[in-house]
Length: 239
Image (cartoon, rainbow, N blue to C red; front, side):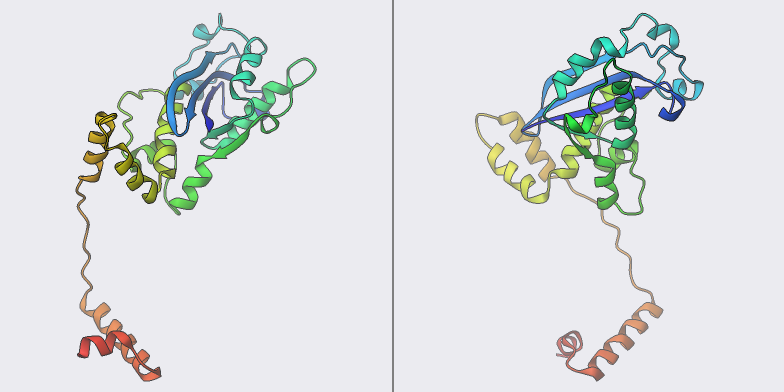
């Protein structure tokens, strides 16, 4: 199974204002493993980068002026991703910018979803972590993904971080224990050692004791249950 983790950087946040893509970073996953194969390029957007966007990614107009324009890299980009599953954080943002670039091509190019299937990890995270912050930074912190080298946002680096987060989010407990047994082989001692280290981690859990008011309310609730019929909890504790 081939999947592509994708991220972009742009001249600004509103495609409706004519902002353009200035960087694309894609990493290949095959059977849930990073292969090292990637597609990465900087792009001359033929317009200025907004100061707000510059503060986020640090990519200057001066740096971009000798870079290729989107129309010269589009075929290589489509060849790299076509027919596979894209993994994108906040996919509507990147899709809107890529589709806008496609629309500017001579003769037009089909929308991205006509070339690939798309997984939006932001939507996944919102279902898994309801009511919590689910930015890529927040997810990296939650899943223990190292961001120490991330002074600025960059498409290839963010794609790498997202790949780590996606694999953690979709691993599942069953898959995790299956991988422990599968990887404890002489053929893969390094991965076996890493898996064992993960399994042996200890975690400090916070224990919150009920106060007297909460205990009294709980006892009243059990009594009401007992009055309405058999109450297993009361019967067990009374024995």
